[in-house]
Amino acid sequence: MVMSIESKRLILVLGDQLTPRRGALAEAEPGRDVIVMAEVAEEANYVRHNQHKIALIFSAMRHFCAELREAGFEVIYVPYETGLPSLYAAVMLALEQCDAGKVLCTEAGEYRLQAAIGSWNLPCDFEWVKDDSFLVDHSAFNEWADGRKTFRMEYFYREVRRTYQLLLQSDGSPEGDRWNFDAENREGWRGKAEVPEPPLLEPDAITAEVISLVQSKFPDNPGQLEHFQFATTRQGAEKQFRWFLEYCLPSFGRFQDALAEASPWLFHARISMYLNIGLLEPLAVCRSVEEEYRAGKCDLAAAEGFIRQVAGWREYVRGMYWLQMPDYANLNRLDAVAPLPDFFWTGETDMRCLSRAIGQSLDLGYAHHIQRLMVIGNFCLLTGIDIGQVCDWYLGVYVDAFEWVELPNTLGMALHADGGIMASKPYAASGKYIQRQGDHCKQCRYSPAKVTGDDACPYNSLYWRFLHKHSAQWDLNPRMKLSLRNWQRKPEEEQVAILEWAETVTAQLQS
Ligand code: DLZ
Image (cartoon, rainbow, N blue to C red; front, side, top):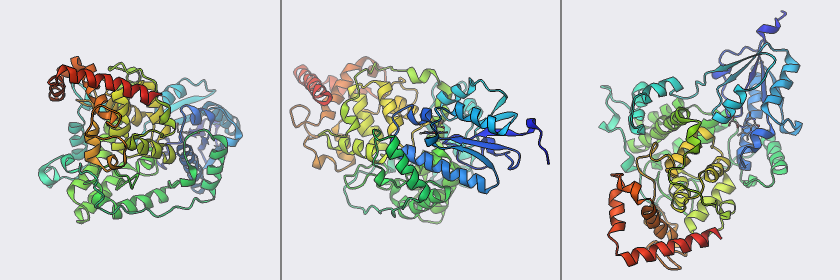
């Protein structure tokens, strides 16, 4: 059968769109449509990506290409070694090879890329296809947000639970008669429970080849690829998720906010990277967790805690990102301008919790949410580090980081640079919080009980200085008033000593 040039379509599949039958692939037909995928310098270098992240994405892309070819598709795949600079160059090359009359692409996850692709000068038509891989699409989110003065996740999350009938009783009320079991997700780590060791994963030939490629082309990027343990196929990701259900979910809720010396991941699922590149689907993982709960294999606090993260928080941050971009990226309401300290690229600091969290982020491309928010983010917030530098660090270092999820979490939630759009109060904490949540302090040269002096935990004086420095703002914030009053009640000479010590600590940490 002879195809007319007009009927043939070229479908560009990005490195985080690896789901068959979603977006532009939903109506793709083998024999008619041609698919293009490309590993390109522009995407690999727009921030200093962790080697783990590049290896995960390139290997998952190559596996997905094989899956599509097996399903009968013609795929033009441009490997990194070809040296193509950009996705635009890849599409132009593919158009020369396949004579398509139209290019299709599923909406990009990041504003940057969506804007760039939208401005391409192509010799044929171009069409965006809606991204249907999230539970809440842009129009549904905008409808929810329309007319609201505040955008609290909690109310959004309840609507998602209702829409998808997640953890509901037969009368539509929430399972357990409460929407949120957050209060039961905060136990500190005292080393009393056994953390299961995940089975080791041997890289297959494709992944092994990608690992050597990344090690040779990105030698100065962070990441120790000899520890690469990410699945790069749908089946592999599902296997890791099933392992989580069996061995970690029962303790996940209880220790969701814990910090442990002995384990970088405790009972966390570590599936965000698979959800974010399309190897797992959000509704399917939520339904599986609900099934575990209904079968009596985990308690409600664990199941609800998981579903809140995936169906609530993840969808909410994505909606908030698209609602507010591009202006959101430039917000800096607390005037944070200090440079990112060098130890963010080595992990070498005497602050034990910070050193462990940064070290594992660099080496493994992963840290769990309390490490990201309350250890690293809290440090950046209290020391007023430049928003752009912090955001680029998070975007590069974590395997699951794409701007739609990274920016609201870092700029909004961790750094409070949006003035409270994402969170009604800043996540600022002293050393006491770190001590309560885990066991790092026991091995730290600093004492969380001291505020000034060489052995005082730096979080303490930095916390008080943070309250002092922005006191005019906190005075207007009902959730910060109590902490501010605690500061204001201190005798003046104690305040002066603390503020002076905070300056000394800052200078030491930045040298
Ligand atoms: C993150 C990433 C990297 C490192 N490399 C590529 C690439 O070479 N080709 C590609 O199509 N996608 C890559 N990605 C993912 C994109 O950056 C991602 O699609 C955008 O950030 C939009 O979400």
